Amino acid sequence: MVTGGDDLSGLTEKLVNAATSLDDSAQADLAITVETDTLLVGLANWRFQATRDPNGRASFAAAVERTAAAIRAVERVGFPASIGNPIDPVKAALAAYDSSFQSYSSNALKSDELYWKDIVPLIDGMQRGLSTLETSLRRESDGAKAETFENIAGIMLGQEMVSVLALLLGVVIAYFVGRSIVNPVSALTGAMRELAAGNFQVALPGLGARTRWAKWLALSRHSRLEPPRRRVFKPNASMRDKTVPPPNGGRSRRRPRR
Image 1 (cartoon, rainbow, N blue to C red):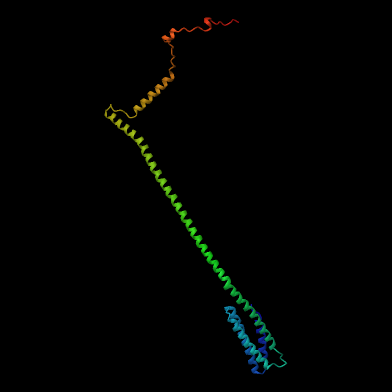
Image 2: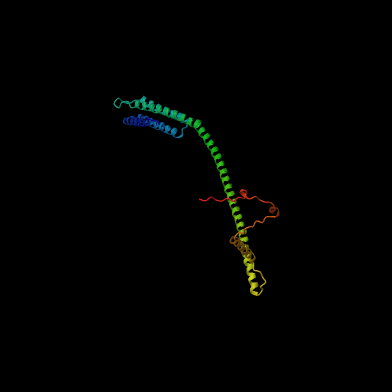
């Protein structure tokens, strides 16, 4: 920031008070001119800080030169010794204010140049890179999302097909199971109706199968209860002609007595 503005304003006000305390109106007018030019110097400073216009330095230098010329005009008239010399402090304060402005304005313009020529292009490049990366990520995300939805749709279609097949299989099984139950019952009902009508020649369905099962069970039970038959060995003619020598040469073995 530019410093010394308050000091310059205070010293200029003292100069105006000293000049107006004299009976010389010309001296008072010259002091008021110095005060006006000092305010214009401050205005040039604030305009430059607000706009950062490089031409503002020239405007500030012109305002300082006008103020210095007004101070020199007051200095040529001079002040009596009883009042002192209020001009030199104003000149010193104006020089310090000018030096502070020159340093601030130079650094401000350099920082602006660094920002607009170096940092802004770098930020712009980073933003373009981020925009490209964002576009790529969005494209990949959309592709993954579409693939996920396709997989979900395929799974749902498979589930629907399995459900339809299960329904058809259930209908087929129910149809054949129903036929295996309904047909014999219908046949038996029809036979019973024939019997009730007096037709005793009708055969009841299922009796043949039951009779076969009964015969098989009776045969199985009979084969378990009947003892096995012993076979009698009958020698044939060829075997009768052959003589078999008795064991031990025809001598009988007697057990010794104890």
